[in-house]
Amino acid sequence: MPDTRAVATDALRHTWSNLGNLYLCPPWNLIPRPAAGRPIGNDHHSLLANDDLVPDGLPDVNCGPDPSPTPPRSTGSRKRKRHSLQEPSLDHDGLAGKRVRTMVVDGLSPTCAQSLLEASTAPATTRRYACIQCEFTSWMRTESRDPEKFDIPSIVEFLFQGWTKSDWKPQTINTNKCAILAMYQEENDLFNSHPYAKHLVTLVKRKDLKAIKNTPVDISPILALFRAWGSNDSLPIDDLVCKLAWLLGICGFLRPDDVQCINVARPTINAAGILSLQVVAPKEKVGGSSTVVKVLISPASDPLICPVQAYSAYLTRLPADLTTLAHHKSTRTTPRPDTVPLLHHQDDPSLAIASSTIGTKMNSITDHMTFPPDTTRPSCRAIGSTLAAFHDVSVDEVKKHGRWSLLSATFEKFYRLNRNSAINFSSIVLAGSGSTASVSGRHNGK
Image (cartoon, rainbow, N blue to C red; front, side, top):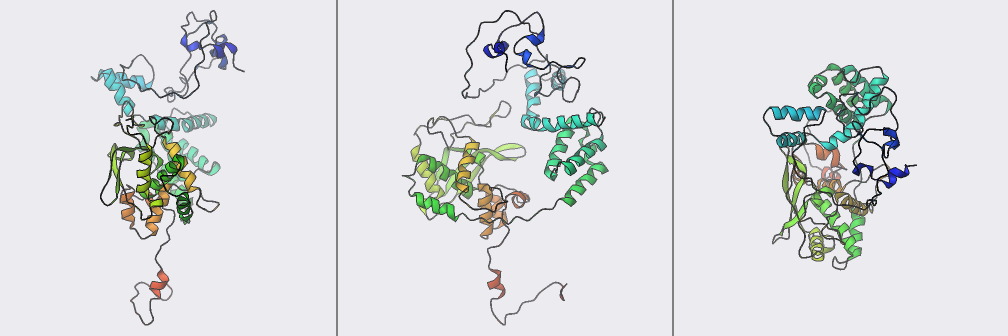
């Protein structure tokens, strides 16, 4: 049970002095006492000392008289505050602080040095890597090996055991390898060129049997559902949002995050009825920088399943003066232009619908399709691109519409659900008696 004093008192908001018994004061009395002689925090491992997931130490506090209770904080949702660019402090220890101080000595201002350091790091990657780094460090100690020493055989052995005992897939092995090498950034090339590492990659690829995807893709139940719903004008707003998001994902090969990035401040529908959408800062980047992508959505002959008609009907439901909002990917170091999002909350039009909610709405429509029991639900981007390739659209055109590189195998590897052909080869081969054709290649069963 939590200590009553810790619950009723926001101890971190009060100033404490005169160090007393640390583990009798709220909220520090909730923290287990460290073993004798063991330092607090991560200072015993220099590679993890800068990890922001575990505090480096505990502040100097003293229990004094009970401070006056403060009202409990609201647990409701709060808008994320945008941090202002402030002069960073150089009075912190660790590798990050040393790098900042080195950059300042080289002539950069503290603000510039801190901003460049933050821009060169990826917080999401750091958090994702922290778990496997801790697991690797623990394994090294269990095996009586020094985790601070860069040892290629130890890394290869750890990855090999994960592959054999934990059934790690090749992609998982590669991700975990990158996480471990991030602890020894200067040694990446040395590891990748080592024969042990090359042999491990060869072994994993040789044993990894890839099945060719042939998932049946039939959207006729969804098209029948849309026709049963009737006109877009009389459709409930929730159903219209689900329908619009799904049609844009299918016809524009859009992810949920792409739909959230649509800026309706500059949409156009030309004389042919083709809708031009502006997607600001999608996942695809050019030269490492974010871009603004134009996506063209063509109309369908049936207005009940037409994405352009659904888009126009949805715009009539929105207020005339939509609020310009900060881009959800905008940060201090990587600002994005403000946009007018397409999908808004109905109760509060000043709030945009998050990509996770958009994905849920898309999936609610996709769930009307039938898939084999051992098949996971595909994305709208995968369904649309697969149907286009199935109906004789060239793969190059599919890649262009999906914003894949023409030289990239991403579409074939991760998005194409079915590689069957829609061509009736029987009618072509058996086109007529007496027809002749030259056959090249080996004969006699070879």
